[in-house]
Length: 479
Ligand code: ZN
Ligand code: MN
Picture (cartoon, rainbow, N blue to C red):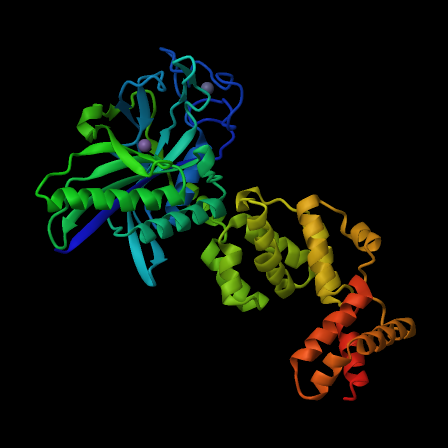
């Protein structure tokens, strides 16, 4: 039988406004518990919320970037439920008139283009955090996160595979980062994905779905999807039925377990929020926001290839993260050499990020120092090996590039008489020490030249100019 997986996503993104959605408290991550709270976000009776204008603007920017219709008069609703991390016992959210509807995001997965429908984007407030202390058996409550603004981006059930889900999330993250509305740090919970998944026989109506909540890495999401697909398929194959429930994924143990039966909207007794007026988004406001839309990743990719002479492959790597493309643009501007800057960013910088376990969102190198090196290497003042070595010293240890080059004697010898003498001496010494390789080369073994060249460069230390050395070696070998 032909089983098909049907997946819809709900992504919560914490907006990087400086204050909360309905009060002036700070949204900064962490902090001493319960110090970033006030009577409004701590849910004291009798307090009144006041909507943060920036939250509406960020939500509209995301809606525009995701090709949504913007609701000109949107409203807030109360979603009622009791849980200890929610001191108000309701969440202010949007059910009946969310701010954005009917969008789409085009993604590429498994070699295929696919358009993923966005059902809606709504604004809401985040809840606090519970800290379960295993030692004392007690639970502590931290309300600092209460009232941090969120947008929830809900797709239609258009996704079919884990690869499509990851492609969608990557593109969504890229978009939010380029818009500058969310820092997308999954490890800090600023981007959280809930996966709704059901299995059916191809062509049949959708089966019963389960929801997996708060998966906090792309890898965990892909594994959870594979596990849940298998679990549901097995149940259905044996003639059983899937329970509608919320499940928690344990990434360490590699399995999920039922948490509670899944609620439907009526369970929350939604009603219009009486303390907030509808939000009017008029033409002037919308036009001003349209003008604020920044250049997005796919537009940058096109420009890098067309105007900067960067290869398509490199442009993809550079724009995969906003911080990386920011670094590329700064380096190009300061060094005047976009092509060399692209090589540096996609080569050495990527290698050093991986090697040192640095996430692109943590990238903050000395761009001025790196641009200085890009200039030196493109002007032929340091050789490639010295360049790589100095880039690493600047990137990993924050070394001063000029000092580092001077101290390690890495500047290439100028193309003067003194240099020519040094190169000729090195060539003569290498040929004298390696008569075998010399004979091999003369007998037509091209490889021997590379070996001899390597020996010459080694003798010259970091300051050898490879072009001069190559010429001198060829001359000495009688060409
Ligand atoms: Zn507050
Ligand atoms: Mn939500």
